[in-house]
Amino acid sequence: MTARPVEVLRKLTIRPTYGYFVNGGFTPGTGVPIRVHNPATGEVLSTITSTSNEQANAAISLADEAFREGKWSQAPSLHRSLILSKLARSLEERIPDLAEMESLQTGRTIREMRAQLGRLPEWLDYYAALLRTQSGFVAPTQGQLLNYVDRIPLGVVVQITPFNHPMLIALKKVAPALAAGNSVIVKPSEQAPLTVLEFAALAHEAGIPPSVLTVINGTGPDLGKALVSNPLVKKVDITAGTATGRAIGSLAGSNLAAYTAELGGKAPIVIFDDADVQAAINGAAFAVFVASGQTCVSATRLLVHEQIYDEFMTRFVDKVERITAGIGDPLNPQSTMGPVISQVSLERISAAVSRSTRKILVGGYRMTGVSPLDGFDLSKGSFYAPTVVEDVSIDDEIWKEELFGPVVAVAKFKDEEDGVSLANASKYGLGAGIWTENLSRAHRVAKRLDAGIVWVNTHHRNDPSSPWLVRLVPGQGMGRHAS
Image (cartoon, rainbow, N blue to C red; front, side):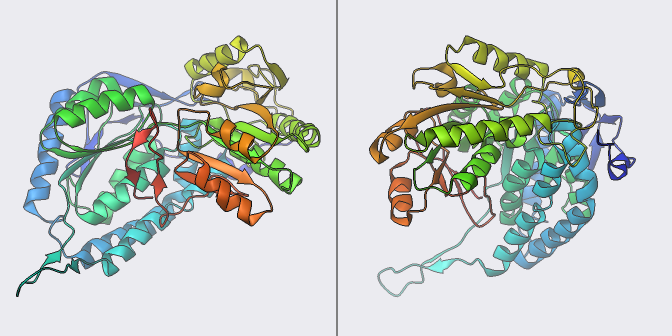
């Protein structure tokens, strides 16, 4: 048994209660209080006070006033660049604390969160650098005229973010919006809002003027309509489920606000017979089980060429069994995977797997008892075992629907045409992966996949310079994110 490392026993300061962050400080919400739980233990970490609709509308008005006042929106690009760079350095200093807070509120392993949050300052630095280099351009025209095009901010931008990557997704949205000079209002998931609230305070300390960055608390249905229907809002950017995205999109459309939505995924990984088998096994395991399968680009459909299927699956199942044995305290750097976000999610995933008539090769159950890694009591959290289901057809629920958990549906394919056809048998079109040593095949197949992002011999790679694209297939989403 491995003892819990001393380094994770630091005292972390989490405020017992968080109001919403507006006008440069925390203000108690007048709505219902919401408890934020640690999904690994069930313990209450903090309580957020919900922002009422009246407070949300008042916050939008303050954001609009700040925009029109121009301290940020009309500030020289160099000034905004310097502030964002300063914020990046402040964020770097807080990464250890914020990574632990992310782990506590999401249940994700500390090693995942340290790696992920360690890169977040790059997004601020990237857009700070763009501000120093990006300029308008002179467009050709007729006559003795000067025709130039300039980029200007929109105004108040509302961003609604999910629980799975609280800081990453928020930063990917906030950094470009602030760099452009907008006033930004973020509504993080009520299940994991703490780090985003702390970031807002950090931004204010770095020099972001009051009400240029606001973070409000509450549930989506309660606050969504108030935020999106307000005529002062000029753009809405959301990462959520399809049903939520449609509801928000209809409201944004009626308000004539610009709208960007990323609404989930069912990413396939296509493993060809010429792939490096061990590299593909390791890559697929990471793609499937990182964040306990709770990412929009999680590899939830594993397609393996029939010539290597038996060898691959034998070794892949062995890999998954080792991941299962390594699950323990998420704050233990040796722990391999954390819980899902809540008991509700756990029950939904379990029910979907139970309804399947296909063969479960490994997993398929809630984890209880004591971890063999470190003695952590798994029964207190919402731990679901890494699960591999074999011979899944394209009509099965676990093939078609986004479960958002550590479950992968496996099928074999006979040739390139068959592999592409199976990969595209989905209503989603966000991410996909290809494993092959044939460079020509990699490019050829990548162009044929219905996915906005295609990785070759890797997965989950992300960079501020690379757009986060959505292939426009029914039910998936619309637009593109800045990164």
